Amino acid sequence: MKNNIIIKFEDNRSIEVPYKTKIIDAVKLVQQDVSNILAFNINNEIKSYDYELVTDSNVEFVKLDSEDGYRVYTRTLKMILYMALTSLYSNADAEFITTINKDQYFIIKNMELTEEKINNIKNKMKEIINKDIPIVKRAVTLEEATVLYTASNNTDKLKNIDNKLKSYATIYFCDGMYNYFYGTLAPSTGYINDFNLVKYENGAILTAKNDNLEINTKEKSLYNAYVSFNELYENLGYATASSLNEMILKNKISEVIQTCEAIQQRKMIELVQDIESKKDIKMILIAGPSSSGKTTFAQKLGIQLKISGYNPITISMDNYFKERKDTPIDENGKYNFETVDAMDIDLFNRQMKDLIDGKTIDIPQFDFYEGVKKYKGNYLSLKHNDVLIIEGIHALNPIVTEFTPDSNKYKIYIAPITTLNIDGYTKVSSSDTRLLRRMVRDYTTRGNGVEKTFELWNNVKKGEEEYIFPFVNSVDYIFNSSLAYETNVIKTFAEPLLLQVERTSKYYAQARRLYSFLNNFLPMETTSIPIDSIIREFIGSGCFNR
Image (cartoon, rainbow, N blue to C red; front, side):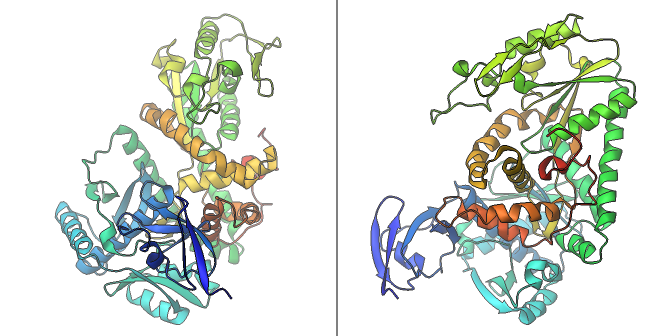
């Protein structure tokens, strides 16, 4: 066993400290001010201030400007909210519904949140922050955890499989109160230096920035979709990980599958009926973030449109990329395929206008290997009942379809609006849902390892935030592609992939976080899942093209 540990920092500084030195004590030897350091990335794992060093380590500081830092910050903010609620309204049963643009909407199930109460909570949170109270993580026996969680009306945490399989639970304690948030918290309440709490609808919005928070049209439509589906799944009893796990244990998961698929089918029929009500529709525009299920959705929509007397013709915007030599370059010197400037907008506009004007066009096919468009005599003209289905990341951008009036367009935003929760304070992330979907699909259909998916993900999300989300306010319909049971399905396929990520990889912390998240779910077999289900686009054995 080594008596001393060598620590290397991200700026190439290094020091030697005794075995089992706490990381914060080691860091203070080289940096006096740690007020903006929320946690530490030690050998590609996120650790808290009290972590004891037992091996030579590479250390990076986790700050608010990183994704890991933001997660630590918001978890700590939720802990402070929990403390304020417990102090003021001891029996308050909080439930976070959704996060949009990093703003977190929650309700209190057993209490009306008035402006006065929200101001009281906000002031109490400020008081807790100003006291700079230490937050301590401690492992307790499952028996003690049962007593603690029962006393605090948090027994939902004990129902989770991850806790049931252990003989102990890890809990955060702060000023006599306690809770757990499935990840690292800051060392004290004083590390939260900015937040806001404002009333919205039947609840409130918690945000990590103290600015004038206004919910615009786009956000309202998404919030309303989340709230609507959350209420639906609450009523069905499919709102929590533990409820789905229980259905699996009781061999009733087929009932869940059938119900969730029926909900999507009903929404599809409602969508087609809405399209039918608008008489001048020439094109249906479909956009959504990566791994929303756009490919399967477009094909299922086409079938429903045929039943209604339409002849749907699907056009993928992927065939309208600029030639590789004309593709924009990003700040890292790589081709930027996410930007709208990578699209041959002029050609797309011209050909779509010609189609609507009754002319015949030769649709290109983009050769991604050679990086050029090729014309293979794929001629197309529109007949009386024909309707164009145009699918692509930029389909909602008005410059793509400026050649025709809005009355000719029907715009659809598709995304997994995930309403499942681990407990009241921890929702299943829609972004993580999409990442896991993509990881499984990339591995099976494109031969990409999980690290390749991680490598691409940040740029994919950046493109979505810039080129998709700003146009959601213009859509005619929001389609929820999530299925309550899908995390139990994805677990089976994703866990072996996540285990392939070595400890030396810079993506190890990300893989470990997702693996820990999946520990809250039981795996389920897939034979009962219909072959036309959207989830088949990612796990395979479906009847539609992938």
